Image (cartoon, rainbow, N blue to C red; front, side, top):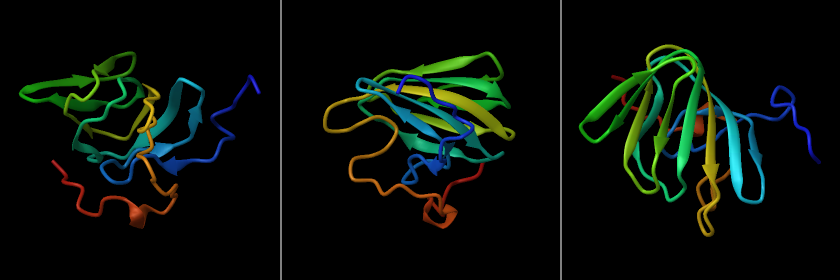
Length: 131
C-alpha cells in the first residue's frame, strides 16, 4: 500500500508510559511517522530513546527542554532530538504535531518494546506533571 489518510487511520496513545501524545501512527520498514495531538498542559515527561526524532508543530505551541536548554516552538517550527538525548515536551495550548522517528532494531519508533496499544486515557501516565 502506498497511500494513507491519517484522518481515517485509528488513533492511539503512542507512548503512554511517558507521554499523552494521541493520534495515528504510520510504520514503514525504516521509519515511523505520527500525527499527534497534545492537550494544553500535557506532553511528555523527560525521557530519551534510541531513535532520532523530529517533531514539527502544525498548530498550537510547545515548550521543549533539553537539559538546561528550553525553547518554545509554534506552527512551522520543529525540534530534532538526537538519539538517546533526554528531552521533555509540554503543550502550552492544544497542539497538533507531525512526529518522525527512525526505527531502531530492538526498540522500534514511537511505541516502546512490548507496549500495549491503547485508546484508554486511564492507561496513560496518571501522574503527568502539569507545569
